[in-house]
Amino acid sequence: MTDGLVGGPTGRATWLSRLSVMERVTGVGSGPLLLCIGGLHGNEPAGVRALEAIVEAVAARRRLLRGEFIAVAGNLQALAAGRRFLAYDLNRAWTPAGVAAVRSLDAANGSAVEPEDVEMLRILDVLDEVAARRRGPVYVLDIHTTSGGGGAFTTASDLSHNKRFAMAIPAPLVIKLDQHLEGTFNSYMDHLGYTAAVFECGQHEEAESRVRAASAVWLAIHAAGLLDWGDAPEAAAAYRALRQAYRGLPRVLESTYRHPIEPADRYRTRLGFRNFQRVRAGDIVGDDRRGEVAVPKSGRLLMPLYQEQGEDGFFIVREVAGITSGKAVGAPAEAAPPHG
Image 1 (cartoon, rainbow, N blue to C red):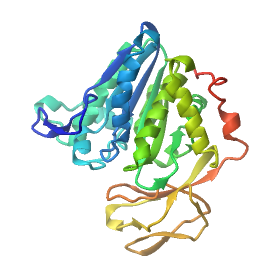
Image 2: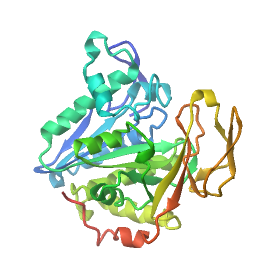
Image 3: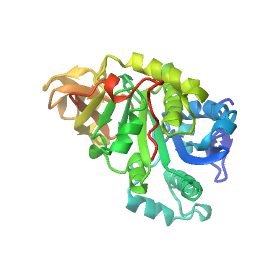
Image 4: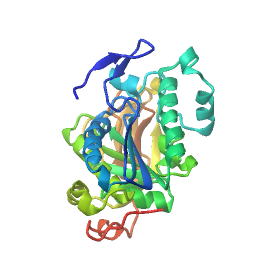
């Protein structure tokens, strides 16, 4: 399917995607349910495009599938505009109170006045269907990209089942990132009791980001228990490729600092910084209306901001000692999916 715009029911342009509502593949037997979502930020289409291709491949193996695979696109109107968001950040709005407020709106009667209200209501409809259809554990993979270049990584809340699910993807796992952020979709999945992880698959425009996104989805399909290694050779190939690509980076890191910004700060990251680049306390990484911006502590830089919209100038992370890629997750022939 080619990219394009079509007129939506409210007259706004919507992203032409088969995932505009939801795409579902149901296996022949009961089992886990895996929900994958991409494009919660409209300038991050790589996950949506990867999911579009994977749905067809999974559907071709319907007779082998245990449980259900669901794929959905996130902020359709922001995707059409190529912007992170239009009125508010859809990945900072998933607090219980925020969800309750949006549920009280009626999009059909026009009381959902903001574009993101409409998008959240659509995704909540998907989540309601997930809750109604589930016949086993629910797993969620939320796919993103970053404005800065450098390595891909996973992140999850500091719960053992979430970390185990995230570590099925052999890229660095960043923990405690959620402690700096409020209202993420992933945190709402915790609230619902689902096993969930985020995969940041690379820089927005990087060609390999879509490839990495597809790799992560196949690994999530296996990790959730929908397909065995033998029935999903794409998962085994993805495991080997990602493990090799990120062999030189720490297996687990923790977030130690977030640099919050507001539009009035006029913050700009200086050119040349990348994910996981080492920095020392006092290094200058950007500028704002007050002057130079230095990192307050040593570690590795994460998600340096190189886009117009965003509330996070950069993060600092540090390695968690004693965990290596070889110990965290076995090779495909050895790894067991995290059931339950």
